[in-house]
Image (cartoon, rainbow, N blue to C red; front, side, top):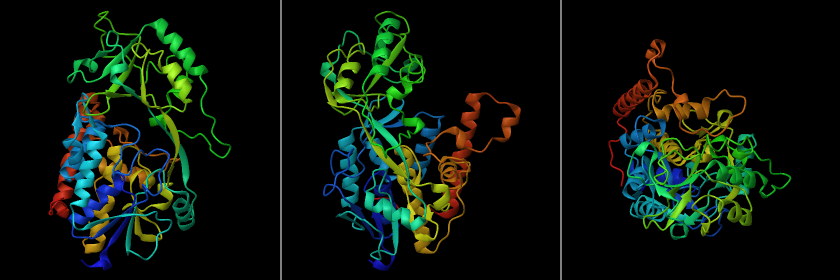
Length: 448
C-alpha cells in the first residue's frame, strides 16, 4: 500500500475505531494507536477497542426521536460500529443496549480482520511526521502530554468538565418481591427492573442522599458538569422533586403490587447478556464508595444489593470546537489533522461513532481529491457538526443529539402537532441525507 497517503489515528475508542474502518474501506492504510494497556485511564477496565465506559446503552432506537434518527442515518452510511452494536444487542425496551464485552470483541474482530488496519499499542504524545494525515480521537481521557501538545498547537487551552459513572449491581442481590420488570407505557418486553418508592421511602432516601459525603475535587479541578450527565446527588441538590422529574420519574409505570403509579422509581437496565448484572440508570455519582453502599441500599428492592462496580468520577477534556475546528472537523491551521469523538465536542456514544465516521469521510475525500458537497444541516449528522463547529453560544458545551439542533420546518408556521413535527423532521433528514450520500457516491465501497 502507498504509505504516502497513510492515516494515523490516535485512540481506539468508538470514534477512532469507526474512523479506522471507514478509512480502510476506502483504500486508505491506517495505523490505529492505542496506549492501553501500556498506560491505563482512570475509567477504562481493559484494553479492548470501543470500550463503553459509563453505560451500555446507546439510547433510543425508537423513531421518531433524535437519537433514533442519528442511528438511522448511520445505517444509511453503513456504519461498521453500529452493525457491531446491533449484533450484540440486549433487551432494553426501546433503547439500543449492548453486551459491552461482546461489542468490543466484535469491533476488535473487524479491526484485526481488515488488512488495511494496523493496531499499535503506544502512547502518542505529539503529532509528528510519521503520517501525512491524522485523526485525533483520543477521547475525553486524553493524556496530559497530548492535551498539552494540542493546546500549544491550536493556541487555545482545552476545556474541562466532569463525567460520572453509574454503579452496577448483581441481579441475585435484588429483592424480587419489590423490584418489578416493565417498560414505560408498557412498551417493549419489560426489560427494565423498577424499584418503586412510596412518598415516605423517597423522603428518607432523598434526605440521606443530599447529606451524603461526596469526594472533594482537588483545588485545580473546577466542577463543571455537563448537563446531560449530572451526578445524581447534584440533581438532588436542586430540590426535593428534581429526581422525581428526572431519572426517578415514575410516569408510564404501574407497580403490580399496588396497581398504582409509584411516587418515584429507580430503574435498572441489564448490563450483560447473562442478565446477572444491572446498571443503575441515571445514578452516575461522585459519592464515596461507603456512602454509595449505604444510601443506594435505601432504594426499595436494593436493601441487600451487592455492587459489581461502584460509581466514580473522572475529568473529561474537550476542545472549544467553534474556535479551533473547521466544518470538516480538521484543525484550523493544521488541516491534515482531524478531530473526532468527545474530544471534538460531541457527547454520547452514538454521537462519537458519527463524528468518527464523518471525519473519516472528509479525510478520505481530501486524500482521494474528491471534494464532497456540504452535508445538509437538516439531517442529524449535519445539524450536530454545524453545532459543534459553528456554535455561537457564549459558552460551548459538548453537543448531544437533540431536536433543537435542527433548522425549523416550513410547516412550523402552521403550528403542527408535536408528534407530527418530529416525524416531519425525521422524514426530511433521511431524505436529505440519502440525497447527499447518492450525490457524493459515499457508500460505493463495502465496509469490512
